[in-house]
Length: 198
Ligand SMILES: [Zn+2]
Image 1 (spheres, protein in one colour):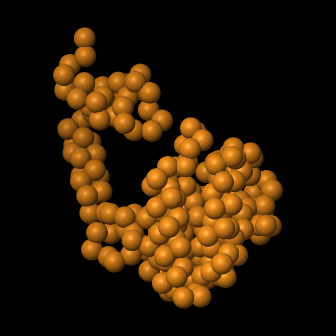
Image 2 (cartoon, protein in one colour; image 1 turned 135 degrees about the horizontal axis):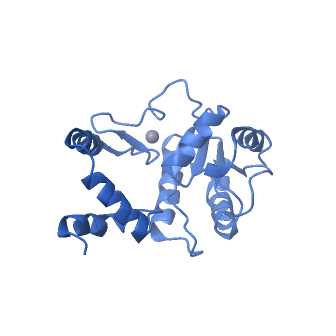
């Protein structure tokens, strides 16, 4: 018998990625058994996320009261280079490799169903507009994703749309496993894949 308080958690958590029903139930009971002050800290951390929203340039998270995220707003970053990634955690992975100095665009998780969704297309359109708006500043767009059917498609589409704007579209060199997410690549592999981009 699952108490209704726990069940209401499961309703929310079934939408979270990577959390199956058993793990979700375990986690809900774990939280229910936490000390009140630990649960309070958890609540505070969650509430803190309300002060964040999407960066209008790269769709990464930013502080609500800033106009852009920390990377887009950093004048030390190279403005001529944009890496297209699937998700926020890919940015963290790339930053950890300390090789890429440009800015980003988050395309959205490509998923496994082999279909390019409307929101992916919208992000690509957004990138095109950003390139046009920045008039010749952006010289290269790197598709920073592992090779698979869908990222191949994205690569071809970016090349078709951005080449006429004088932007070269490249992708990571060998080393990222086929179908592999860059999140799972080690720093050295990523570094060399970035240097040997093609
Ligand atoms: Zn940004």
